[in-house]
Amino acid sequence: MTDIPISAKVECTDGHCGKSTDVIINPIKRKVTHFVVEDSSLPDYTTRLVPVEKVLSTSNDRINLDCSRDEFIRMEPFITTRYIEPTESIEEETYWGADSYVAPLVINDSAPNIIQEEHIPLGELAVHRGMHVDATDGRVGTVDELVVDPECEVITHVLLRKGHLWGAEDIAVPIAAIDSIYEDTVFLTLDKKAVKGLPKVSLKRHTD
Image 1 (cartoon, rainbow, N blue to C red):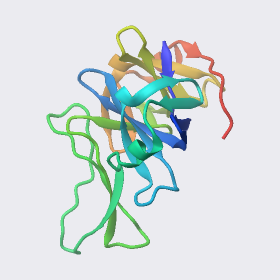
Image 2 (image 1 turned 180 degrees about the vertical axis):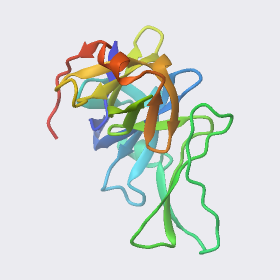
Image 3 (image 1 turned 45 degrees about the vertical axis):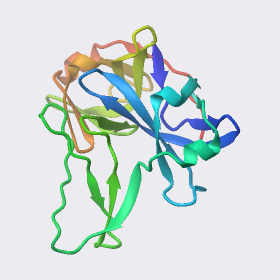
Image 4 (image 1 turned 90 degrees about the horizontal axis):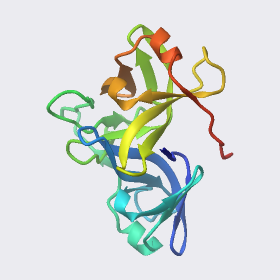
């Protein structure tokens, strides 16, 4: 199994182009479709939505892209900022398990008339490190990585990071154990006892 790196350095064919912040998945096919890359030096918005087909190779701390930096800059921004009127309605939910998927709009508390919008392809979901993970009887940890079978490129597990019950090891939660994703939380069909009994995974970590 190969882990999908989040918070990893990203390199274009001609130089550094930022850090990965999210992966975009198709919950029906259980496949990664895009990476989100953040680069504060970009001329407009600081994030780009990178198709997984542009990923040349990955390791625990690096993603190498098969494109130039100029090609990267021309890719679609993932997060954009726009102004709204006070009377304009805002939808704020993302849900895995319903027929529709809505990209979340996050209000900037320092400027109530400005929102940031995540451009998630229709029918897909954004997953990032640090999302809460809840068992049926309470919180058990946070999302660390996604695990993909390299032969069929299907997501097989979510790695649960450092739950306080289990020390420093990650726990491999089967993708089939995910009941739904709502806002910033992944909900499982398992209780805490069942999660504690899942396989533990040791990963080499890069330092930021």
